[in-house]
Image (tube, rainbow, N blue to C red; front, side, top):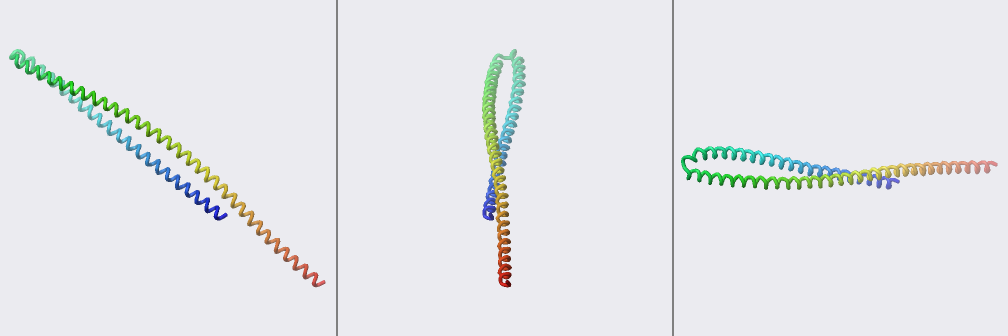
Length: 192
């Protein structure tokens, strides 16, 4: 009974250690998920900064274009050559503007791709986390059932041990009583 009780206690300790291990793994997964959230926040801040810079560039370009147009109107009467130079300069700026628009489009496409990839990654992590949490909860439930069964078995073993001990004590009392009766009988026969 003692050996069985110690064996059951060892099983309980092992089950508790396994539960602690699963808890640590869950905490590690939570930390990884926090890192993903922080990475997403950094990406969003970077995108906001790029949008601000693009907006400022666009505004600067519009201001510059307006100034160039005004200068072109003033210089048009003075010299056709100067007008041609300003027209060429305007074409260059227009090309630059197209390049900026193309870069913006590329950045938007890249951002959409990153956003989609991030969403997929987040969904994958969420699914894995939910699945792992469900598995851990199932394992914890199984361990709790096992601990309950082991405790019930321990109670039954204690009860059986007590019954055997009581029977042994009763047997010893009966043996002593029989021995006493036998001695009294022999004494009476001897006196007779």
